Image 1 (cartoon, rainbow, N blue to C red):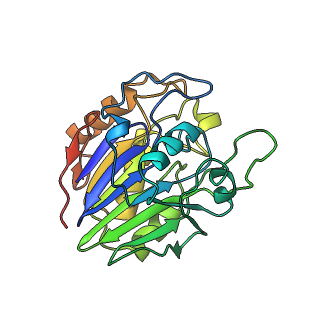
Image 2 (cartoon, helix red, strand yellow):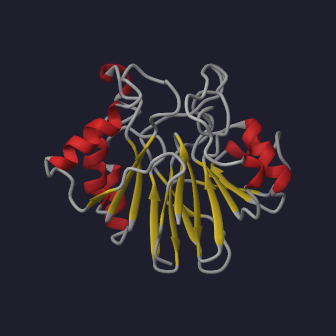
Image 3 (cartoon, helix red, strand yellow):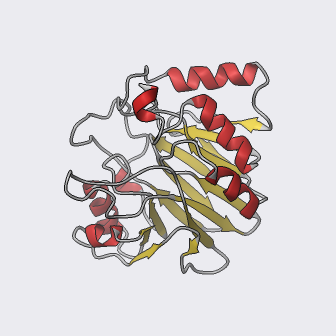
Length: 253
C-alpha cells in the first residue's frame, strides 16, 4: 500500500518492507503547515528505508529525521550525493548516497534507483547545488513505483519511461508553479505533470506537492481542481488517483 502524508511525504509498504519518502511532519522555517499530519509520527515504527530526494526544507526536515531516527535506529537513509554530510550531523542511522541512474544496496529483492530531476538544492545561500537532487524508482516483487521528487518538466521523464517500461504508479509533483516565469524551471503545473505521467508510461498517476504548504502564488486547492477537470475532459490516459490526506491505495506485491 501507499499512503499520502501531505505535501511530498509518502509511506509505502510492500512485501513486508516499510519505506518513507521525504518525511516532513511539522512547520517549515519560513512557513507553517496548513494541513494536519494524518498520522502520529511517534507510531511510524519498523521503518526499513527513508528516502530523501533533496536538501530543501520541505523535503529534508531535521526534526522529522531525528524523530524517526530515535524510533527507528535501524532505518537506512537513501539520498543523493553529498547530502549524507548534512544528515549525518543530525542522526546516526546508516546512510547511502547515489548519483543519477545508480542503484542503492538494498535487501532481498528490493531495488531502489536514484534518478534525475530538473531542480536544484540548498539549505542556505552559501551551499547552492552542493548536494545532488533527484527522484527514486522503487522495485520489489512485481511492483514498480516512481517518485519524481521536485522537478520542472523535461526530457528526463521520457528517458526514465524507456529505462523502466513497466511502472505501476508514478508519484509526480503538480504544485508550486505560480508565477510560471519563475517557478516552471523547477516545478510543474498540473498540465505538465500530466504530460510527465504520460511520458513515463505509468499505469496510475498520483499527484503531490500541494495542499500542505503555501509555497507559491496559486491557490492551494487549484492543482487538484485542474487535474479533476482534465480527467473529466478525458485528457488523462490510464488512471488518475488523487489521494486525500492520509488516504492509502493498495499496491500489487
